[in-house]
Length: 251
Length: 295
Ligand SMILES: Nc1ncnc2c1ncn2[C@@H]1O[C@H](COP(=O)(O)OP(=O)(O)OP(=O)(O)O)[C@@H](O)[C@H]1O
Ligand SMILES: [Mg+2]
Image (cartoon, protein in one colour):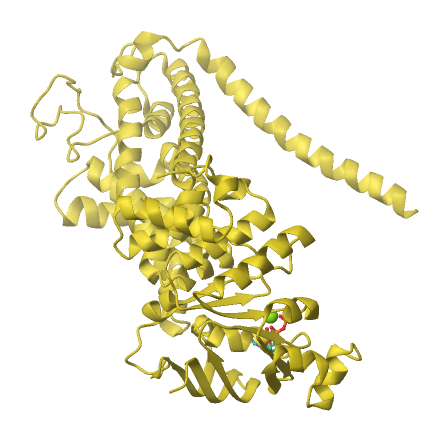
């Protein structure tokens, strides 16, 4: 018995004729934080977005190989994409709340999945609490989400994603556009959320990866060069390329 | 000439063009209102026109213009929204889609008199409805549909991709994303466009001459029988609009005060468009606020 929630084998991803991800094998254990690092354009976002099939939105993308979520191939015809995305939540680089109130931002998806008014109130509160935002917004739940600061908006987006109780949370550079204080709040949050969710986070900040992740995956030009325990990755990486990258020799 | 000077000169030229346009508009408006306002009184806006003697009003025509506008938008809006949503969100990139787009372009460049004659053939004669509000509304729908489709498409294009991704990433279906995320965000754009399209209904005459007709029966606002031709809301009665009335009075009017009636009617027409625009904008931002904060 292993406790891997996602298992990818021989995954390649193409945008039309160009290949962005090359034969990647990787697994993600339950309730762990995995960080993706690597130079710009190496395919981190591409790979991340294949895990909840957001790549389907881009015309002419093609995924080969196998991605198993709880032993089920997520690219098989039996999988309903909406259900998959409900299980695999995502937070984007730029905070993107809906043009709705704070309350409706979070309640929108649970309501769509049939939750009643009373349950919704509970979901909104518990999601905001988990995202460490409740105290800051509890008095203005029905005000527009755009009255919040960038950091608060990003935590709202995290709250929105966990309101659906996903198994996995994908974060694509969630702190790239935030100030240090907001960044720290989100980092604390990730460590906190790891108890309940499996988290995969893309980051350009190596210190961030070192601080919050259990394992780190280094991508380079579409290849997964190395994936290992974070501590080991930053002290004695086994690949020359990895060492060059984390010591700042390129990228 | 150095860059600074060139910049100044260009700015002055561009600014004066802008002011020139405002000046032309103000001149036109001033001229119409100056001539028209002295004619307008309560009696003029409520009483029916006279056919031979002076002192008639434009009451039924004013009512017809607004009613026709509503009928037209009732037909145009759902069709235009539907086609716009389809083209921007569902249509595959192929020959058929290109064909649809080209047809819409062609439709939008048809002269309105041609649309009017087409309406005469189909909506008046073929259906047997005769000159009627419904025929006029359908002709104007043909005329306004391309605009409405383009407006919807463009308004939807301006909705940030991030909004759509956010919704889909939550496992929300495409249709629900369209109705609850894309359309609310596109409403300001759609509304502005709808107002533009409606304005054309007020001003249009050529497409209505042979569809809604050039006469209006005496209207009885107390009538309860919607099938009667004097019932104001009967869509199968003929209905001359303000714009058509202005044209008719000017070309074949027998009344001695034709000039005054035309002046007054023009002023009313301009004022109606103004009032309509302002209320519609106010209404639009109200809706937008309703949708974007709490439901
Ligand atoms: N929609 C697309 N169409 C075609 N090529 C794309 C598309 N998106 C990404 N690519 C290409 O795929 C490769 C990987 O891009 P990706 O966005 O996954 O990189 P990344 O590692 O996330 O970079 P960054 O750190 O800058 O976000 C790049 O070469 C990029 O040019
Ligand atoms: Mg990226």
